[in-house]
Structures are given as C-alpha cells and as structure tokens.
Image (cartoon, rainbow, N blue to C red; front, side, top):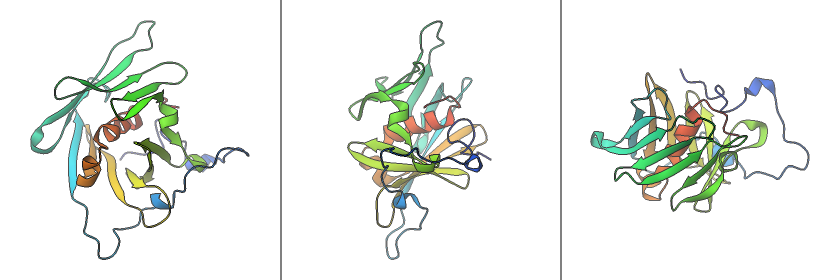
Length: 204
C-alpha cells in the first residue's frame, strides 16, 4: 500500500527532525488530528475523482469525476535544457494549474486561486516534517498522513473538519473530496496537491 513517507513526500518520521531555533511558528495542527465527525453532526458527502491513464507517470494523466466525466487532463512536456512544465487543463482545455519544474525549486500557479510561488512554500512542511500546510484563498489547511491515506483537514484549534483524502488503488490515485470542499473552491488545489504529492519528484 502507499507509504506517505516515501518518494520524497515526507521524510521518514523514524529519522527524526526538528525545527531550527527561530523558525517561524507554523499554524496549529490540532485540527489535523484524525478525529471523527463531531457528535450530532451529519456525515460528509463525498465526491470521488480518479487520476488514471498514467503515461507513463501521474504527471501525464486524466482526472475523472462522478459519472466518469473528465474534469482535467495533466500533460508534462519532455524538456531538453528547459525546466519543463506540467499543465493541468480543465474540460474546456483551459490551463487551470501550471507547474514549472525549475531548479532547485519548482513553482506553481493555480488560475484565480493561487498566485505563482514555489511549490515548497505552497505545500510547506510543518513542524517535525510530519505534515504539510496548504493555503487557498487566504485559508490554511493541513495535509497529514493517516494510515494509507493523506487527508486534508482544517487547521487551527477546535474540532477539525475533513475536506479530502488521497490514496492509491492499483494503477490509479483516488482523490475523495467532500461536496463542501468542492463548493468552496478547493477542487483545483486538491488535484494539484495530489499530482505533486504522488509524482515522486522533489517538490521542496
């Protein structure tokens, strides 16, 4: 099964790591702990998206959703001396996400959602290198390993809310999102995160 500590996503926790003294404090990850839905609250309604048809990797794939509808297509060029680009185009063939594989740090832009910035800044490693934060439209979320999944939670104090989870299923990657997460505009960001966290490349 998928190991979220492998392939450069997070270093193995057994290796041990700590923030250098003076490092800026990250948002609290109390909200990233895998608590169940609050008592009395309705269970979330999930939508399933599949990243499949790898050619040969997830950086060239098709993203389908409910009713097998194609939502996005990811295409990555084969660079010579150039850094190379991964373009995630929507169903109307318009670029929704652009990843530029510059060295030493790749950069990303999500149309109308996230301005151009280093991937390692957008999916920043948190304290202890055990989770990553993700900022979308001014709000911070947390991607944290949980069993064979990587789950997206609300950040901050209080009972956390689960928005999405990523896991591997044979030759495809499954992204499950709550209807609320899609409604508040997290779809493109979560698909981009799934690509980056599963691609096996260094994103820091």
